Length: 342
Image 1 (cartoon, helix red, strand yellow):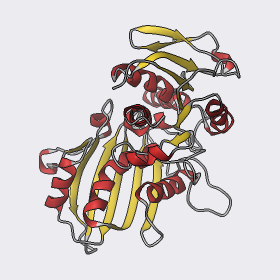
Image 2 (cartoon, helix red, strand yellow):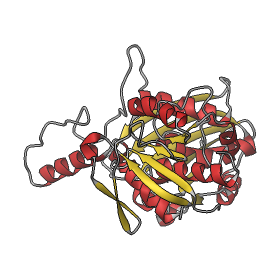
Image 3 (cartoon, one colour):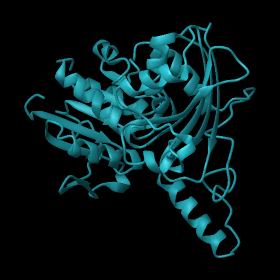
């Protein structure tokens, strides 16, 4: 890794993903001479934790964004749409966690272990995939390289931290009310009570579309990252579950070439940042709690689909805040430095 001469900004530093980014920058000893946490005016002057120190939040302005080499952004699509180009104009390369830039044709969508070379062709902005896409991609890409994807059906069971701190607080409050036998207050974050419930809706429905915006993201991003055409059929159903951290996913994968469960385990065991946990008779399979705090995707329940040829079922779990968002963004920033792609 290069000398610590880079000024690194984190936009949205007080949010769930932003604080995780700060933690991972410190954890991975990122070569930064200074880390600048950018936040909204209501957080001006607030201090956030970075390693063993506390650093003060800065409100982005034409003056304060000068001199930033790399910005890792996780502050919402509308904010990124406004500020990412302004940081680029000021001389920074932006690694963006929001959905705004992902499907722009001139913006690379990068998973560090899957398509790192795509980052080389950036024009100032590099997009980080959706957390649901990310958890799946570490396992899906090696399978695609080995046997070729023909069809993918994804069902996701997503933690509330993917929505943010207010969702975490709502789940906590509702759970306490249910356990205390009290009337549950009307939900404000989700359309229904999330405590002790499962909601088959992540994000919103657009007029005339039976798929949510989250489901559309996962399908489109998978195609972009893996370079898939329309001949590969993809369908997704995304649900919100009363879990704090850790997305779980069920994949039904049909491949062009036959792939046995044993060979699939071999491929995944050799893949970077994938851990095979697959002894169901002994109770060994991925769970959200096992994945929380880790950067690997855990894969298990690998078995043939008895009703479809060349088709396997898999169960995955991954930390949506770490590898699902923050860690990959930091890894992409590391790629920029290591390969002199800034």
